[in-house]
Amino acid sequence: MSNNKTRISKITHHLPTHSAEVRKHTQAILRRVCINTCDAAQDYIYSRLVGTDLERLVIEMLLNILPFKRLFLFVLFAVTGVVVAEAQQRPLITEDIEIVSPGSIRFELGLDLQQDVNFPLSGLNGDLSRLGVVSLTMGLAPNVEVEYGGVIHNFLSINRQYRESAIPLRLTPGTNSTRGVGDFYMATKIKMRAETKRLPAIGSRFGVEMPNSDQSRGIGVNQINIFSTIIAGKTFGRLRVYGNVGLGIYTAPLEPFTQNDMILYGLAATYRWSDRLTLAGEVQGRANTRRNIPRGTESDGAARIGARIRAAGLTWDVAGIRGLNRDSARTGISVGISYETFLLHPAK
Image 1: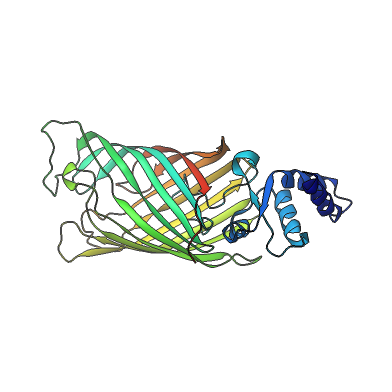
Image 2 (image 1 turned 90 degrees about the horizontal axis):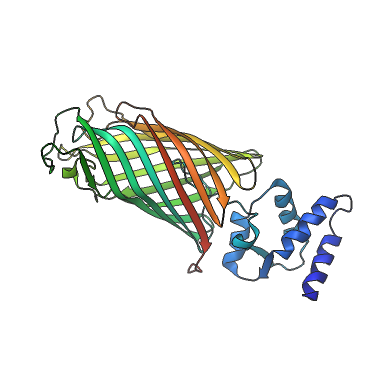
């Protein structure tokens, strides 16, 4: 304990004497961190450690002042609560360029309630409950992460049959609801260029959506789809702006050897109101590029606006949803939680 106090005193002695607030913050941060020599955690400090502007300044000074090349600070989330995970995704769909740190795993769980949704393939219209919107993201390197996700269970309260179904449906005559598992996906994100003072960070994300749903239940299309996007992001003080643009190759459910190449887009912004509260909003979706649209591959999009709140070691989120296209949900709400932890040391 006395060695730690001596070390803290020596470090804070080198800070600007006119900045009592900086000195106070430094001592508080140092008391709440552990010092180690793990390569994975060293990557962690450079790729993930952020907080208030003052805390970020302190961290940068400490990394320059400390006399050991391999020395770093590994923040204890559950104890401190001063670190904000900038790679946090929910409640937005648009991908941020930030990467989950090497060896860390982020788990997200959510619930979406959407009203007045059209399902063009089955011709059903109703209120959709997406129960268990899950994702698991793992950091493999400072610039690479892999993600697995999907919807555990969809429940549709049927309002009407707004058009004739194009496929046989396995529904009881006169039924007012249907349910089934959603489609899952696998994706890899690569950060190719770090953000600079003037230029944004740039990366790419590509993946595949798997045919897990049962089209006879009237909700999913049960097809394999491939997507690839370019990602860019830039921070302006407390404001962060990022966007996606790319190509989605969607299999046409009714036409053999046919696909619909769709434009994928997303523009999002987050504003860090405080260490615990972040406001977020986006416009995101897919746009059809064909004159004769293969049924089941129509344009779809939504605007979301919401917030993230960090409390009890978790990140809680909520967002309102407003559909942008004819077949999109008219309105909706999304709520969820996220948890990230350092779990393993990636192979080298």
